Image (cartoon, rainbow, N blue to C red; front, top):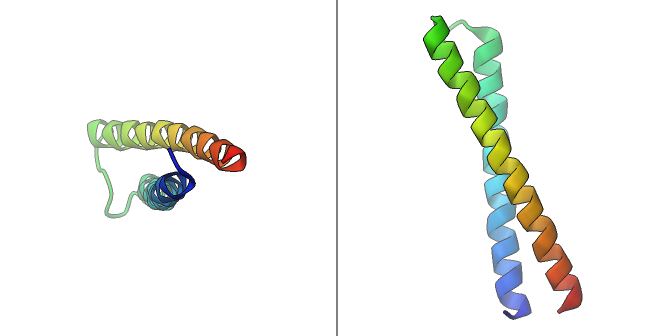
Length: 75
């Protein structure tokens, strides 16, 4: 794969990371505020599960980002 392809992938990963991190912040704010957020234990559990899934996806994307940066360094 050439350098341009790695850079394009890196840009997509960076954009996804920004979006997912903001979603996690928003969900955590919803959990903490509870004003208009989930009202019962089942809803709260679902939101917490979503946060955990998003955070796992962020970790995967961060690893992918590191791999792309290494490959760009070798290109």
